[in-house]
Length: 106
Image 1 (cartoon, one colour):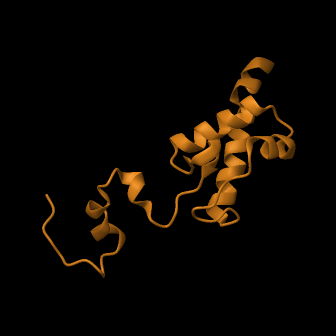
Image 2 (tube, rainbow, N blue to C red; image 1 turned 45 degrees about the vertical axis):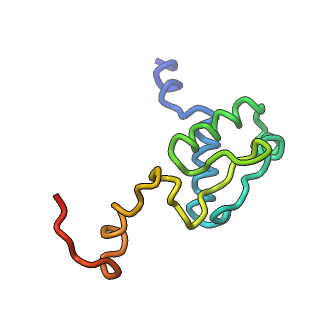
């Protein structure tokens, strides 16, 4: 019975990813800003570097961070063009309907 309860708890990497995601969404880590290094995060969360890297991979998969120079991870800048693989124009009417002319969409 105890094994079932333990299986439902989020992993350490998931808890760290959730904490970092909250900081990104709250604006404590700004747009285009570098996240702390793996070493700094390891000290802060009292976790091994492998767990921190796993948490960063989870955030990268959810598109909250992207890899950058020197192995650092960065939050997306306000120019989110890279998130959509260059196809951001298709999202513009939905994102800013008052700035885009009406057009018939399929």
